[in-house]
Length: 231
Image (cartoon, rainbow, N blue to C red; front, side):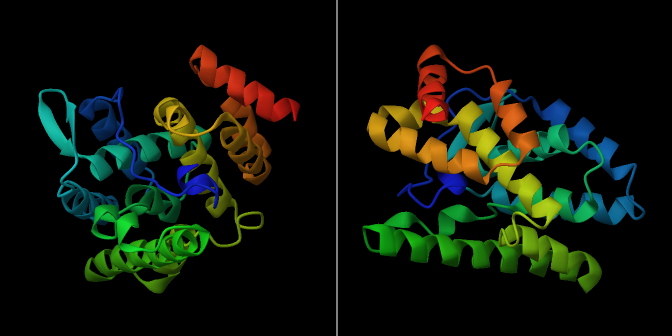
């Protein structure tokens, strides 16, 4: 399940039904910045991440313009993170905006097929995202007190003991279920889908699980989630 399970062999999905307008994203950034001591620097970091992600050659249409896929994904992840954590910390918000930064530069096809190749790709991706994000933050004058927590979240370390890492895991899973699952399940056997859903459920916090049950999924997606939870 995208970032939510080590069982999935590809994360290269296209968002079929973009539903978050750019204006809403700008409003979320302004609202989050109003609670941050150095709001100007925070907004510069968001802008720097966005400029990098907008170079994604896979494009998504929104409000009459095209966005790089990873830029649009970052909009979704940022919003979902805020929906879970209204008072999200600055490191969590920065990590949400950069969690998949420049992901297209390390495609899955560059690694061997099978589980070993997948795990190597996933490990390298996390380190690449973390290094790219922390480089941007260092250039903007952030110190290690902020950079280190962002790195920890990007690397998805200490999921059960670090609330911000766990919030990121929950947000990633929710974005997948809401925006990518319908496409993914068409390409995957029902048995594997159910297994992935069960493993993902085990990784989520109680808050994340509650949010999952409130998602407006299609009938077939609801059926599969129901089968997974019954098991």
